[in-house]
Image 1 (tube, rainbow over the protein chains, first blue to last red):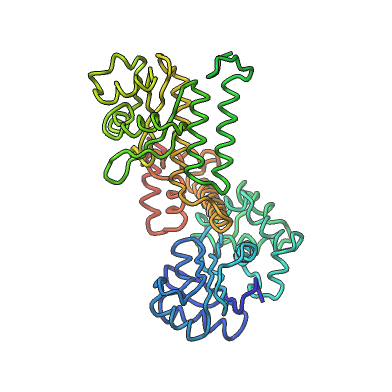
Image 2 (cartoon, one colour):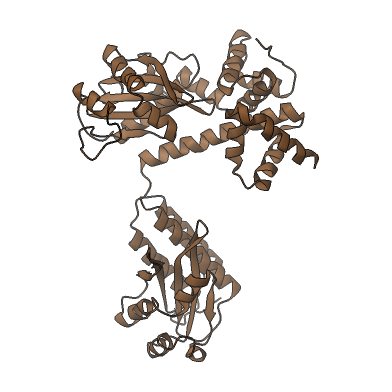
Length: 207
Length: 257
C-alpha cells in the first residue's frame, strides 16, 4: 500500500462541493472517501479549500474538533490517521489524494514527500490514478509519468492553455486535456503543439 | 579601511562583511533556528558592522509597551539602559513615529529624555540611534544602537541597520522554522501561481492580439493600477468566467488609455 497507509483514494471537488471518488485502493477506501460527500465535511474538501495538505495525526485527539460528524464516523471504521494532499490540474486545485491509516502518528517526512509527488502525478489528465505503479512512478525519475509531468509543466504549455481558454470558451483543465489529446493524436510533443498554438500556426476546433 | 571596535584596521571592506552577515543570517532563517539566539547574533553583527558599543531589539507587546528581546551585552548596566527605554528614549520615539531617530551627541538631549540621558551618559554611552522594525504596514518595535563616541550615523550605516532590522522582523514573524511539510506545499503553491499567470498571458495574447510579453506587461500594469496581486488577477481571469467580461473591459480601458 502507498506510503505505509491502509487505504488511499482520490476524490474531486467542483465549485466547493465534493463530487465524487475518482479512484480508490479498494472497497474500504471508497467507503471512507464517499463518507465525506455524504456528511459534507472531510479532508478532501478542507485541503482543496485551503489549497494545502491536511494532516491529522490522530482523529481520537479530543482537542481536534474539525470534523464533528466525519471524525467520529472514521473512528468507528478504526481509522486514526488521515492525510490529504491536494491534486492540482492546470493550476487549479481540483481534488485531493486522501490517505487513511489505522495507527495514529505523524506522517513520516519521506512519506509526505512521496504523497506530494503522487498527488502531483495524479493531476496528469487521464492518468490511471490508482494504478498499482503509482508509487513506483513517483520514485522513478525516468518514468513516463514524470516525463509527461515535466512536459506539461512547461511555460509554453501553460500559455497555450490560456490561449485555448480564450479561443474555445472552455475551462483551463479542459483546454489542457485538448492540447494533450492533440499531441497524442499527431504524435508530437506537447511543447511543439503549444508553440504552434502560440504562434497561431495551429487552431484546435471547438466542439 | 575602517578601524574596528578595538581600533584595529580591518582588511575586509564593509560591503563584504555586510553581505557575509546577511547571507549567514538568511541561511539560518531557512533552517531550524531559535529566534532569541538569532536576534542576539543580529545585535552582535550590528555592533560590529556599525562600529558601535551595543545594540538591542525592543519589541512592542500587545499593549504597545516595548520589551527587550535581545541585546549584545549581558552587562547589567547596558541591559538596564535598553529596558529603561520602555518609558522614554530613542527606541520609544522611533517606535511611536515609525521613523529612525539619531542623536549624535547625547549630552545635548538631557531635556528631551530627562531619565534616560543621565543614566546613559553614566553608562558610557555618547550617541544613540534607533531604526524601526516594520511589517504589514505596522511598526513592531525598534533596533536601538548605542555608541561610545559622539557621532552621526551615515546613510549607509542606516541602511545596514535597517537591513538587519528587516531580517529580525522576518525571524520574529516566521514563528515556526520551515519544515519539509511546510516547505513542499509552499513550493507547490508558488509553482501553481506561476502556471496560472502563464495561462493568463496566453489568454490575453489571444483576446488582445498582442505578444506574450505585451500580455504580461498589461497584466502587471493592471495589477499595479488596481493595487492587486498579479497572481490574484491572473486567477480571477482564468478561474472565474463570470467576472471575466468586467475584468476584460477594465483591461481594455487600460490598454487604450
